[in-house]
Length: 429
Ligand SMILES: Cc1cc2nc3c(=O)[nH]c(=O)nc-3n(C[C@H](O)[C@H](O)[C@H](O)COP(=O)(O)OP(=O)(O)OC[C@H]3O[C@@H](n4cnc5c(N)ncnc54)[C@H](O)[C@@H]3O)c2cc1C
Image (tube, rainbow, N blue to C red; front, side, top):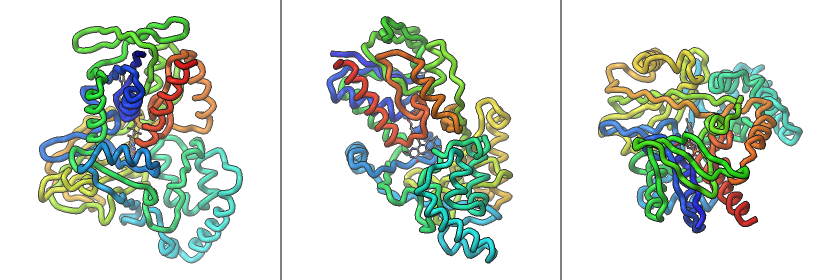
């Protein structure tokens, strides 16, 4: 029986491990943190459950729908996540509905209307290279400037002129239906335990099927022979351990993989700071689960209200907010003290009359260095070259961090499955 080492116990590593076990392989899953889940993790404090970033499962693929339904069983909640956007001191529909256009001055409303008609035709034309050009091509300048320009620049930390148009998924194009971007997909969330209930249940299944999970285990080095990884050395609380393997699936951030192989990696990830606020009272975000904040004067890009995912995430009489602040690793925001970050967020939210300080029961701050691979215009060519430069025949890359692609959880599972398929077909050769 072949031994496979899977690096990283996020959704991708967990799904790959389950697939390998199903197909008769032996699996050792290695995770640096003290628990599984990676980005799809939750923080439980007192009676509050917070997800590290707004998370909901969404898919139209019956395979992943069945997988999640079987995994969660009675603990599954079917959801319909709704969104708004906040500017000029008010909450607005997002995506906008036709009526919203006519709130603009008559001349502007007409301009938007004709730009959208043109956009309908342009969607069949050749894609423009940058996010800015493509979005203006589809929605016109007025809508681009109102809804997308500020948000995108703040979110990615680079000008939308330098961002690839790959980041213009269908979901950001105003559809004037008022329905959320995910409305056409099946959406699900666990009743208990936050989004992390999904990776936790996957980990339990792996161990029941004989897979081994090492937590608090960091990849130290690899030994290679004939362009193949033969041994993985990990550092655990008990010291260094060597694991012999016939193949590896890496789902950890690419810069770490390149470092292990002594190579340079020059593409960037966006980092995130998450502030969780425990609040007395009921609904904070009016009729919406999440809300986007395009203004450059506010440091955050999105708020989400956990009770809207599952009412069991807050104790009776309380609600809570998650606040997402994009930044770069080690920049001014990243290096700010947690108390100062939380204080700043509370001040902004109070100034905007979204929360009242007297209702604040407490807060938690978390940081995630590798959150979003940044798709600059030239990234696609670069990443292909970088991946090809690794030249290790039994090493397979997968996942959002390991593949350097904006993947959601079901896409991450699919990428894990793809890595397993390519590993198996290379063994059969
Ligand atoms: C703010 C935010 C909101 C999101 N919202 C949604 C959503 O609503 N719906 C959705 O489907 N998806 C959402 N996602 C995406 C989702 O979180 C990811 O697609 C998914 O979690 C990626 O899993 P992964 O296993 O590929 O990567 P990760 O979760 O990053 O897993 C990699 C693992 O490798 C471990 N690791 C790192 N270094 C080492 C090392 N040296 N040795 C061993 N282990 C190591 C890490 O600790 C981590 O556990 C969101 C993401 C973010 C950031």
